[in-house]
Structure formats: structure tokens, C-alpha cells
Image 1 (cartoon, rainbow, N blue to C red):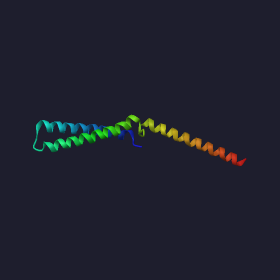
Image 2 (spheres, rainbow, N blue to C red; image 1 turned 135 degrees about the horizontal axis):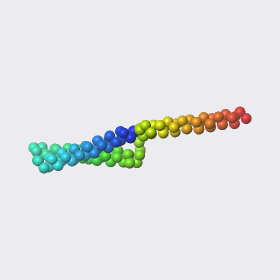
Image 3 (cartoon, rainbow, N blue to C red; image 1 turned 90 degrees about the vertical axis):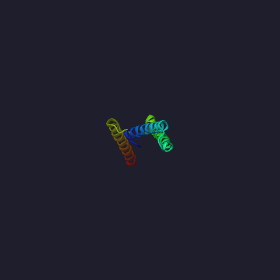
Length: 101
């Protein structure tokens, strides 16, 4: 799984790329530089890529499909791992006791 902080950075990058693409598109259509069609096309490509990133990684954030990399999340993971280890240990002891009888 991807860490939460990575998804946040990717979502922000998608938003920023969308903003830059939109600004490039609007400015090229407004000012009409020499190669304004090329600039407008690049702006459209940036907007599409930015929206894709924002949608993909933003939806993962909303659905909570990430590894919690905060300090509290790490502590919670360690507690769950120790509980699982204790459960497995208890099951192993019960199995050994039954075999011995």
C-alpha cells in the first residue's frame, strides 16, 4: 500500500498540473503568440493529466486505501501485530497440549 503522505503529495501535484495547464490554455488563447495552437494543445494535455492524477489519488484518499504513516497509525499497527502474535502463540500452545494428551 502507498503511504498517505504520498497520496496527498500526488493529489496536490495533480491539482497544480491542472492549474498550470488551464492557465497555459487560457493565456495562449487570449494573447495569441506565434505558436498558440501548440501552447493550447500542451495546456489541454496538462489539464487531462492533472485531472487524472487528482481523480485517481484523491479517490484513494477518500476511500482510505492507504497505509497510515502517522505516528498514531504506526503505534496501532504495532499493537495489532503483537495481538496477532499472542493469538498465534496461544493457539500453538493449545495444539501442543492436545498432542501431549
